[in-house]
Length: 44
Image (tube, rainbow, N blue to C red):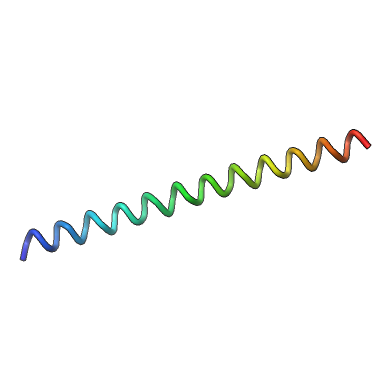
């Protein structure tokens, strides 16, 4: 029973880590798009 609980806890931690990494990637992508848009507007 203890092993199953440990595995469950590990899976939850992994899920949170993955979702955090996905969020960071999404924010970086959004920031890059905003920067490109700003540069495009400044040029013309």
